[in-house]
Amino acid sequence: MHSRPPAWKTVLYSALPVTILFFACELITRLLGLGVTYESDRTIWPEESEYVKTYLVSPDGRKSLYRDGAIVLGTNVRLNELGFRDWLYKKENPTGSIRIAAIGDSFTFGYGLPREDTWTERLSVSLKESQNGDQSIQVMNFGLPGGNTTDELQVLIEHAWKFNPDIVILGYTLRNDARTRSQGMEIVRRNREQSQSTTSSLVRTVYENSHFVHYVGFRAMRWRRRQLLIDAIERQYEPTAPGFLESMESLRKFIGRCLERRIDLVVTIFPALHRDTKLNDFTNYDFSHIHRRIRDEVEAFDGVTFIDLVSELDDLNGEVLWLPGDGHPNSLYAKRIAEILYPVVHDRVRRHVMP
Figure 1 (tube, rainbow, N blue to C red):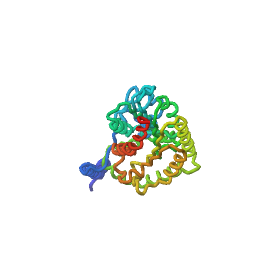
Figure 2 (tube, rainbow, N blue to C red):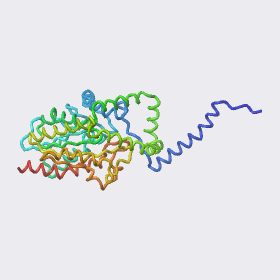
Figure 3 (spheres, rainbow, N blue to C red):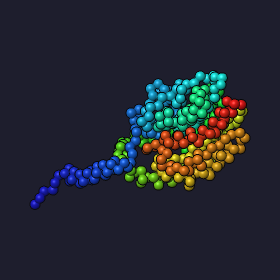
Figure 4 (cartoon, rainbow, N blue to C red):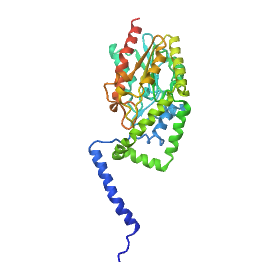
């Protein structure tokens, strides 16, 4: 009569084929160029990526980045003394200079992009080239990751005004601008709890480093997350939703402040993209009705230009516009944003150069 093998051998014999199959699938996935792994932020922060974004919003977080610099999605980020990703310009607007203040959230900040690839920097280069390299044109980046419209109004009043801009560009991002501060802090709390969970950390580590797991998991979650995101944005932008009402009130104040000072204002709206969904088909975009509602608010004021990026991007598959493993614009998207904004902003620059 044969004795039963030790329990550890039974477990080993059962796990070995599964392990071999997993590594075979991992090798095939990598050879075929499928799946991605994350450029981890954990060399700087141990927290979840979403918390890192919100961390950038806090004054203490911005001061730390100014002092030490940081690696965000594999990109070096250094901020000026005010906590923005740009040079610290002199407050006096030199005679003959044209200053353009770009105000928005992480899409304007250039989250995950080298500074030279952000849409603000690309726009700056194009405008200077149009004026034969004239360095007196300054596009100032006041992007605030995680910021909503109320935050952007505060940036306008407390920071941008001090530099006496001639033109202001407001980048309205669908996923952030109608989010209240309490909703943002709830995301921070939830992600902090997740980061403290051993199981969650282990699963996420595997997900972020295995091409095979990311490839399979990405597709398994995509459709579910798509519907969840659609529902969340629809709730955020219900006519009576607190965040939407606050956003529209701040937007009207933002526009009013610019008009009072006779500042040229361009408002552009960034469509909702997300790494884990199919919210990338601009010809059948899910939130066009929300864009129209915001456009109506803006166009109720004379002298303000509204640019809806959805109608300008319908020749592209949205799949090519995001950063690997993230829902922020990549270099191609930033380049297109700058190209779309350029004619409008250039026209306003010419008005200031040749009144």
